[in-house]
Length: 158
Image (tube, rainbow, N blue to C red; front, side, top):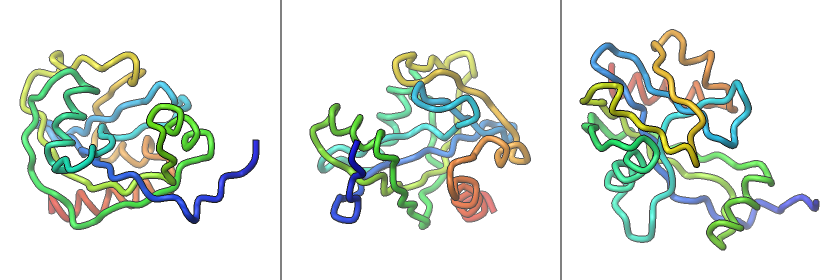
């Protein structure tokens, strides 16, 4: 496979929800496309003319099977990152659009229900887990993932 010239490709507008419960635990998910040690927060793409906050609630519902979330805040810190070529091609096959990666608006979100109400979509999510703030760096292994998350948590949780 030829390498993709990402320099001319646009970033996909996206959202991510840093989900916290009443005990200051954070919800992580493992995509069916991730390796065993790769985790992220729920989120996804923003549709044309969709409000990012609305997009996040929609994505949370699609991925986790519940809409019991309360927006605590929107971060000023927007994250851009490139996808590996294989991810670019997979998204192109699904959407017909060649994206370079994500331009991700980050939100802090409170989960407001019982954890048993979370029903991950098995087409997208292999597993979910709740971890403490201290454990987050062990699971956020993508480049700059922990650093970006830490900035948002410090900004919105103090």
